[in-house]
Length: 166
Image (tube, rainbow, N blue to C red; front, side, top):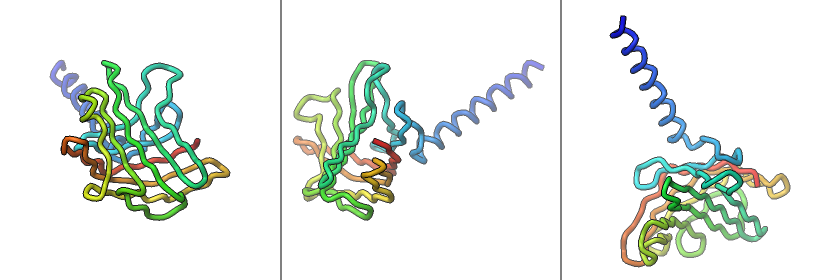
């Protein structure tokens, strides 16, 4: 009887892990604001989280001629990582990330000169905007990019998705 209960508990726990991992990999786990944003950072699932109630996990700044999406994640030591997408002339379609349109990854736990990774001429990526409606204040799409810091280290951001109301 005890072996059977243990087996059922282990099976249930394994099922929860598989379900949780599937939600992370699809990118549509809701943030605290009800928005959806996720990606893989160096192959590890990354999604926004807040430091405390009332803090913001995803910010969208729509300047009509430029779009900025910033997602924040805080760990238990209050260290922050963030992912930022900066696009000129936003609309639906495909955008190359490099020097004009940029992708950033920031890790506040690193030394200051090592903390900011960005796309540039050598490290590039892309953003595909599937839906952009500045009147309804909605944007959704996918992204991936490789970024480099000032000392030559790089990070790979992959399988990124977002579905945001701002």
